[in-house]
Amino acid sequence: MPSSQANTHDREDATMADVPPSAQVDDQEMNEETEEEEEELPTRIRILPGSVDNAASFEILDEGHTLGNALRWVIMKNPDVEFCAYTIPHPSESKMNVRIQTYEGTAVDALQKGLRDLADICDVVSAEFTEKLDEFKSS
Image 1 (tube, rainbow, N blue to C red):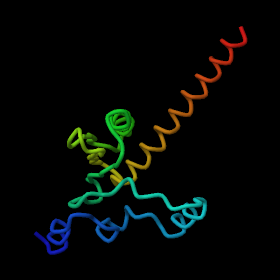
Image 2 (image 1 turned 45 degrees about the vertical axis):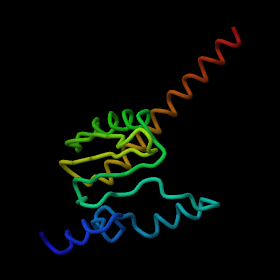
Image 3 (image 1 turned 60 degrees about the horizontal axis):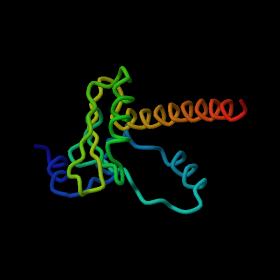
Image 4 (image 1 turned 120 degrees about the vertical axis):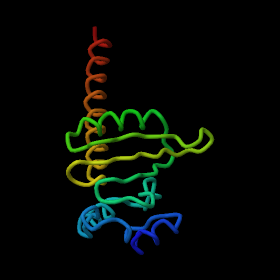
């Protein structure tokens, strides 16, 4: 095993240095996002050790089956994704692990696209629900 991989497996947490360059967000994009936030939020998603460009595992804190199953479904709709699954390691722990493997692109990109697509779906459902509720109330 190459020494860079051995070092990754020896540590409990992966750092951005462990993330392949193609999966890292550029500094300008990161600065624009942090300027919009008034207070810094705790990190809820981290890349687990042993991940590579096209195959990565992510730990998402404070989430369960509701997000896990919906996110898995949306990510699998992406034709560049070969595999996506989630697991709740233990019912008493408030975390979820997601594994993504891609044919093309990076696993980080697939996760980001999946989260954006799921947010868009939720926006459409919410707008439709609100519209129908308003129609019902006015009749």
